[in-house]
Length: 615
Image 1 (cartoon, rainbow, N blue to C red):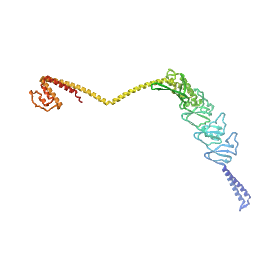
Image 2 (image 1 turned 180 degrees about the vertical axis):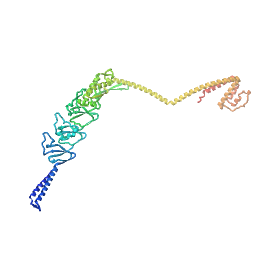
Image 3 (image 1 turned 180 degrees about the horizontal axis):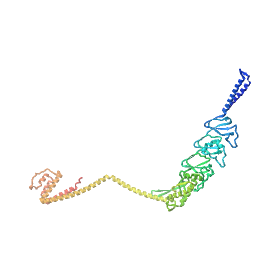
């Protein structure tokens, strides 16, 4: 603006100079400095023309050219030579006075007397950041229809036509003009040149963040607008459900029957409400919220059993859906903890949202009341003792909760599945925890078990003692193994010696019998006396060979006897010893000789018996 005023001042000065110069020429004399007045007048006219032309150029240049920066958009407001806007209109699309629909993109622009007829304003380009969307509010256009919350959405392929202000205001043969007010169409991340006079774009705030659907979830849309005709928006009724909740096709007002899979979506949150539904398997637990009593058994030193009671308050865990189910059986209150595995399938998610609202509401409003009712009904009725068989068992004893847990779980699962399917929830598994049975009902069984265990313990201890004694015995035998082996060897040696002596005795007996037979035959030939003498000589010679020390130097002269039958020569060789005295036996009678021989033979036998065994 300052430059424009400066240029206008220069142009004004040039025009004033031209006018002043014409007046000066008129008052000059006919000849000035030897030059005629006509020549000076011609020069003055030329100068005036140049000054006026220069003034016009300066004015035209200052008011007809504009350069728009690369990150800006030129906006125009017409102030001269235009008609008035129609009532209710804000943007001029046909040359009226006021804010113009036309905008100037970045660059150089030439419009005659632009800055005279218009006010030019440079405004920044709109940028929608990543992860968000631009919410558009139009300040001009057709009014919204009855019960219309947002302006009708423009197809994605015509977003550029929507952002064209002149197209938005006037429309075309195929496209009706846009509507004023909040728009259903949003701008995705990027940069846009828009008319700030016509559109307001909001990008800041969590409400303008894109909608992300994580893995394991689906998105269910509750739409506040219609993008289809009423004929295409007929309700879809789920007749196989216990709740009658109509769904609508995609593009209609209401809960859409189609779901959005995991991903990022740029949804106008004023037009659409996205409900995330977890399609993963859910674990709902009913636990805690009761007091548990115990009766502890203690074995005294004398073998008797002592009972003591204690209590424990079981709180409801933070992750639990609710407290444990309290069952009443045989007049006893039995807390029963339960775990349920359930899942919402993607195709059932719209019905769950439309009928209940979400998994939390399903858990609190549907599953929890059903579980409590069904579990109490099942535990108070008959169930199959063996699944698949016709045999029934009356489950009305407290201990049945423990002994028939599998049958109870199967019965509850079958009943709860039917009820859950009606609300769009699939129950896959039900598990019972250990029932909190009153300890009075378990004392007898526990005492019996304890007594049995004590008996088994005593038996095991006795067996262990016997095994220990056997082990000690084996160890002692191992320690005396050398002595035992020696004794065994001696026993075997004695046995062998016994057998050897027996054999030797039998041999000696045979030998003596043979000798006796020989002597008997010899006596028949030589005579008893001579045979006896010969035997004595043999024994004496044998004794001398065995005991050389008995041999002495002869003291007598050796001489021959009569007939060569005398023993003096043989005894003389042995010397004067005890043995030599045996020569006197030659004179003994045959009977005495036989007696002495028998005694000698008996002694030899005794020596043989007492002789130690040879290796």
